[in-house]
Length: 486
Image (cartoon, rainbow, N blue to C red; front, side, top):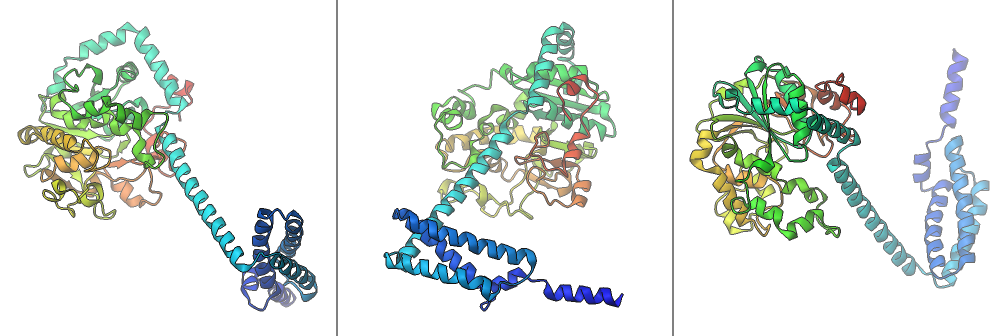
């Protein structure tokens, strides 16, 4: 045992900390590293002056220097004088030679600055490119989900019984029954909507008392109908509507429809030549999607309802949501979780307070809140005419000077003074971008929200959160198996 300890001690003495060695002002490794950096600068300058022979000589000695330093790092033994001296002398001679041909220190500094600037520009370009690619990935529909849509649309077209069943359920009295719990989801993603519905009914105390109102676009209407008509959701009532049948939602009534038809807006989102300086996430066409802005028309879509819970299609429900309907809203229209406690999302972060129309009416320190899980009192909404407020602010922002794109800024203005703050456990956000959410917070949440680019149905989803979403997919469904969804 003593002999073994002695060997370990000898090994420890011989082992070199190469980081300390190369930082030591007296080490040969430090001298070699410094000369190598200078020599690399002169290689660049020599090439720019077309002195290729000098550049080759310097590069050759740099390679020798790198090999010697690599050997020292791998063997754990310091560079000796005998090893370093020939390289140091030859490199010094070549550096003097470079200086003799007028590659002075001033030229070296200017050249190095220009190359540093070029590297910074390349790094910035790579960062922007990475963001753009992430945005494209987030917007793209995976092949598996496209496959599912195709199969479901085929079912809808080939099976008249589904269309007959849809017509039969269209006028169900349950759709307007005030004694039931009503939820609305506006989405073009069948699987995501299914997870929202599945998770809500699975965790409900009385799933048969739930009614889901889904609105989708014309492209996905058949697929959405086929899915929800051919699957069982524990007795919950589900209706699917096509936004293209909302003829009242037209250019003469809705500012957002007018913007959607505006050639400049369409060029910004869908044109071939786009402004590279625009923030990538703001180029997402969802910001000018009617489905995305449909949340401001809920009382008009459901004129006979008094209360409704709005759910985004990227949430998962983990607890019974029926207590939301009996919350005291203190006369407010919108019940939402505030977001300014940790992320400092206050009004000044979303709105342009340098414009007097904003600064004269709103508190810049007012607390922001989240869309994604909201309880709306539709009676109070109609009384306050929140939709008219929304129209007013959309028209005021026709030139885009009051806020950037999206639905939250106009919502902050439209629901100002009309929002009731909910306990944060009702709605936990960030699962689409934040890798470090506390597990205890996730477990306590009634609703978890995958807001951000890393959606759970995409390959770039955050691994530790994916099972929370995937467990509400019916993996035994033949279409899901055929399309390799899982």
